[in-house]
Length: 67
Image 1 (cartoon, one colour):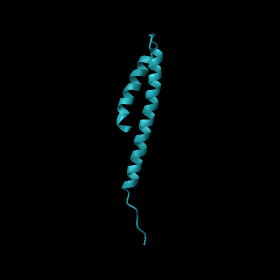
Image 2 (image 1 turned 90 degrees about the vertical axis):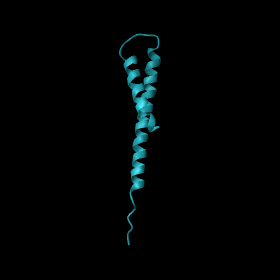
Image 3 (image 1 turned 45 degrees about the vertical axis):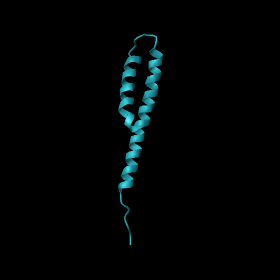
Image 4 (image 1 turned 60 degrees about the vertical axis):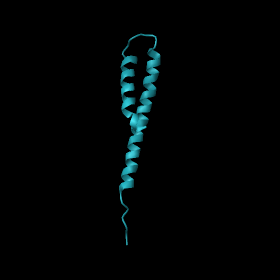
């Protein structure tokens, strides 16, 4: 999912510019819904990237051996 972060960012920004600028056209409600879903997907993608990077960091740490 983290591979699609930039795609979700582009979709969110472009649909926000089209849907929330005050222009009136027949598909403005659909564009706003697309913006909402793309924003949610962007947040999930960013959280996924953070969680995976933390797991990789924790797995790379070597456990200390106590005698």
